[in-house]
Image 1 (cartoon, rainbow, N blue to C red):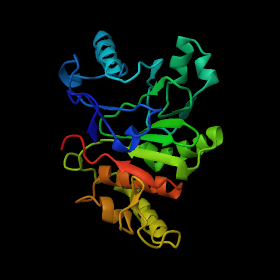
Image 2: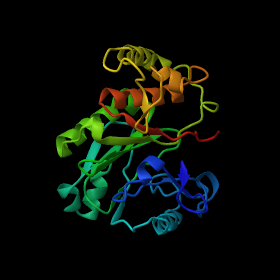
Image 3: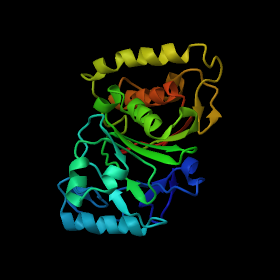
Image 4: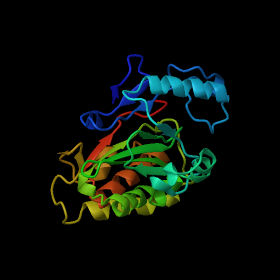
Length: 265
């Protein structure tokens, strides 16, 4: 990832930075005013942090952006697969109605200019998508529950329905998540054993017999996702990321940009 601000408070992706009609960022914990468990750059109002400090952090956030947004659209995430379209219905709603619409939402999509789609994560995986052809964007909160319930696939299908999105026109970025070294969850692996077989069956098929995995539009020379991102041990975070990557490939998305680092590492 690349630094968007000098103090490294906000990071970004080279694969998205080349598109002048969109702006994106990933925040770090640096450069804010929150304290304790929220130190220091917490911009999420639903975390239990002091409201005034969150507002100050959001002001700092918008000052670091290339263009001040109309709104920071921040949903109340519940580890489900609900996707909200930021369109006419949302824009015509009152502030109170908007808050109600954002409750229980883990994915946002829009084509409206000026609206910043925000996803909050701690150890879960954030995903950003950009449909180059239809100028549509998406932000997804992919925890393990949402991931095994196919939130990435469902969001892409919703974009297809609303905007005509096709996987081949999508640039997708997988954001920072928990480090493999810090989270070791055996009891949840029953949800992922079948997923590993899906990876192998799909990727060993005849659709792309050689150099099947592509990153940022370039083929990697690997025929299996397990060769690209196999974790050092059976750990939940690693297989969440494999599942997300497989969801993209099954929907025809081949311009994929992993973040290259994990939180806590």
